[in-house]
Image (cartoon, rainbow, N blue to C red):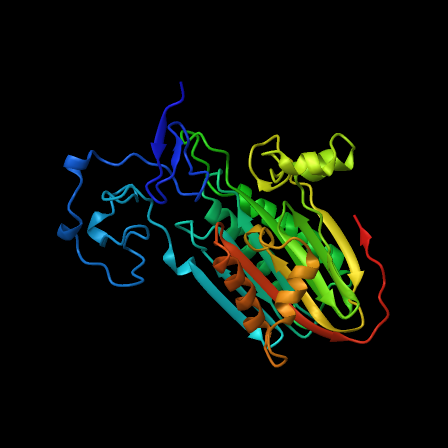
Length: 351
């Protein structure tokens, strides 16, 4: 007969052998017996936003044990500076990431690089059931940004596709370089990733997992990436009708990611295309946003719903706020590039 325990973060019942809460993603740890639990009042009072305090219950730094776990509530100490991150490089390029309403740490990460040659956007989402997913997403995003910034000033890659390929390879290496604790029993660090590089009218995308990219323009809105998920794989090969696959608990299970077990796939997909004519938006996001949106048109309605003078940061904030107001069951990240070009649309080629 199954044994159960309650998540110390959200209180929902979980299997006793589980390591992470299926509802809020928190690490499931065993607290000291109630009679032995330290009195929070005996710990040093924590100041608001103090990164040395417990991010779950607010206990002061004195309640954090040598192993990094709170002796009051059992939560692992996390870097609260990542709970809400905003970055604006220009009125046209910005991103926002938020921990959401249910998780105790933000396992998403993003990076933006701007310059005379064009822009780079990257969004990563750490896989919660793996070790150190927050480190994995940050390492991947930072690695992409480092590759793009390493191109000497005044010298651009002739083919953005090759730049994306190199960036994804660097991200893979960065995630696999994170130390693995064999005794933990969880998979090695994992993360999804989606990268977009704009050079002139040309955009090159690369992705692994289910973080997505969308283009919203005068001629319509479309999702440019295809999730590496169990659902897409079984439907594409005709093993199961879409309606049946959607009802499966495996529907959104990832089939590819950066890092993870040695036998897992981290083969990226790439897509190159021309931006459509007129003004529009290139949006990269984690599943914490798109899980609340049935299609690209819904995303378009949201981002266009801001005042005409709204900049990229305002529009990115509106997307993140929307997800949080709908429940914020996951970390949520959105990166937005506003563009305006005059060209004929050229259909993309997928690799």
